[in-house]
Image 1 (cartoon, chains in turn yellow, red):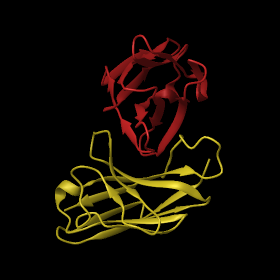
Image 2 (cartoon, rainbow over the protein chains, first blue to last red):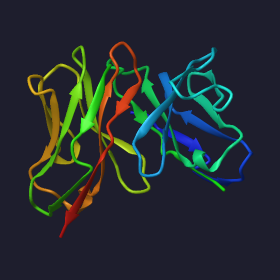
Image 3 (cartoon, each protein chain N blue to C red):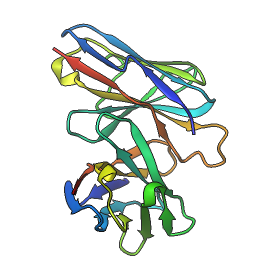
Length: 117
Length: 113
């Protein structure tokens, strides 16, 4: 498996501001993803973070609202821009591991709990 | 398109009794299927996965799931529930040709003493 850390673990932000969430992995990974879990809901994929190129966004998510960077194999950031209360969610980073023969398994970070006032 | 349906949003069992959490999937091809567990205020943990090997998959903490293609099901079971099993359980399918996952709506398992 992999040890995945996210910073911050939680934050309370004001409407209209932006927050950048960091995801760091202790292993080289093939794929990195960002998910959102709204209160009481399941997880929804926001985007796939691609190293050295623009992220691939799912329907309903756009780069202007959720810019993503992935400068290397072990690190990615997700920014939640111009926040509103509807953005209050847990944001989770997940990865698949390069060293594993089967890359089907995704491992999840602990999540960042965001509350927007 | 691939999707997954968890038939029960909430399941309550008594400690020591069997657990059954139901999941049905739809997929044009042989899917990869997973069960994840999320304890309150904790991250997601992989319980088990099916990737076209044995149809009966054993996971951690005594859980297992059986892939039944004819029924398009992947139900999660455990012979005897423990209080520590109380959590949210997600059935998950991996998109064919992609690495991203599609999550079911989740089943909250409550274990009564």
